[in-house]
Image (cartoon, rainbow, N blue to C red):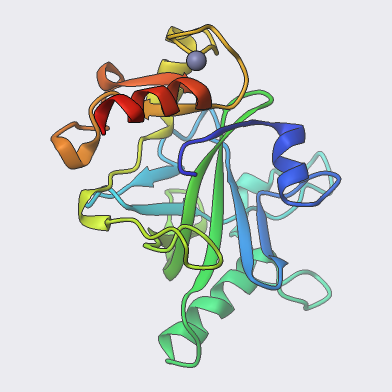
Amino acid sequence: MLDEIYSYREMCDLENVQTLQRGMNYRITPKYSLILMSRRSNAPYNDKILGDGITVNYEGHDEPRTSFEINPKSLDQPKVTRIGTPTQNGRFINAVEQYRAGKSSPELVKIYEKIMPGVWSFKGYFDLVDYSTKFDGKRNVFVFTLTLSKEQSLDNSVIIDLSHTRLIPTEVKKEVWKRDGGKCVLCGSNKNLHFDHDLPFSKGGTSLTKKNIRLLCAKCNLAKSDKIE
Ligand SMILES: [Zn+2]
């Protein structure tokens, strides 16, 4: 479910892996790729959400740090490794090029975002539709474009209405998490939490400010939807 909150362990268990070391994981399973969004403190717009509210720009990854002398932030982001195999950037780029050439549908990418150390939130399933190379003032970086997929499950059992969906910016989630103290605002539970729209976007609520987003547990959410129906 969109905007569910997981501990690091829960997230790894969901993905059937021991650890998630890398931010970009091309084809972590045969069915999808996985991206971890974690804002660097010095780069506020790493996970920019575009004006349509459902498209994310995700910056590619740097050369791994191999020595103390060379700062990876001073180098162009690499498409291939030193031994000539594609990096994660390169694999995601290949997927975009296959899609552009009409040879495949867009790569399906799951995105998790880091809210606090050890606290992650599921942003959704996305279609990887484009990439570009951008000069950031010092060097060239890759920018990947991902659009929220209308199918939010692998078996097509969950279809969302994209015209009535807006992604909650990570910064807003961080503020809400802090304000609500990492607990359900109704019962105080710290289990099975998610970021809840007080008034859903489809009913006129906006998801862009912390005012109408709160932490809710699954139990209280069920009770809430019973009341609405
Ligand atoms: Zn609750």
